[in-house]
Length: 499
Image 1 (cartoon, one colour):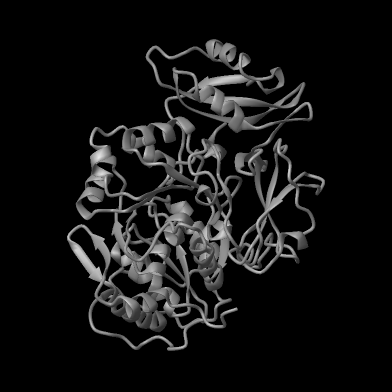
Image 2 (image 1 turned 45 degrees about the horizontal axis):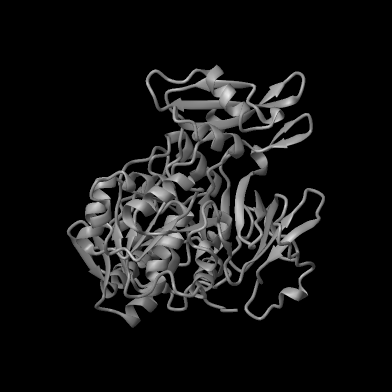
């Protein structure tokens, strides 16, 4: 175990000082440029925040300033708290107070907060940060989860956890990303996927990152073509939008690897993207609390529709019932660990029933801020709250969130199953299903549907359609037509805002 944290920017500058590191519009920086800017930012931040481990909020888009400030915070031994610039004042205020933030780096004023502009890496040099750097097990980042129920929680990720996820990804053959790649960085940096899998991977490999501050299908395709992007990471909505652009195949011609994460992609959208571009999507599954990647089709069948693949090398994963019985197990939590040494390994050619995903690995978080509550147990295992099953090939398929489970007369009903049926109706643009109280069954599904046709399908028509595809106890008790659904910045439906 490393005793000091890796300084990935410094290592990139030592390996490839004159290589292009970042491209943002007309700005191009080498790794030597980025390293020098990070050093200046680290010195200034250390002077502004004299509390060891002090929290610094970063409220910026996908810009060069974000990159310099973020790695400056880490080099200074402080804790980065990246926040969504699109948050409401109430959401910003809550996160700042909850994290006990000492300083906010932003390009706009935030009431009641000590704010500084983001140009910390420009101008004359400040006093350098400590040459030793922080310890590997020191807290590096607080990333606030989307808050599917109640207020968001700050997941505590150490320097070691962030680095471990890159080590795990490095063991995939063939490699997903390497130093010669040009990587599109359009997933927001305040999200763990954009921050560590995107930006972090570029720095880890000393590759080249193309910054896109706000996603636009046509504009991002133009950037991909202009800069010869070879690795395009994105969320489902991005790939669906690209596949509808007339020049998608030509613009994506240089792309070697396309990676989809943050949420499950509709198999129909994935198939359309492949048909239009000739590129097969690598699908991944992860969580903020895992820094974030846990499984990927890059280690299984890249073309299998609906699959989230298998665990990364270095990640152990179980499917477990509510009473603790292990249905299935795969992977190891360290390079030299034998699967036989784990409690149970199940091989079943018919696949498994759904169970909760429970994981172990060096990439896991240290619990939630401030006291580490609800983190991994004494043996290193952490229950994700997600439900999945393994098919006969041993490939995983995500089913739903435990917190979204609907109990109808004691029977488990997964909203995602109903949503998939509704989404397959030609008159449905989007659907979301949540639990509602019911006097007879305890709970019942309530569906919100955004029509795709004019005139829209009626609720009665959709009920009949569902009845042809779902068991009776799974049928929505009510179907409500709405003009739109509330979404997070990465495209997930904010179900807590429904009802």
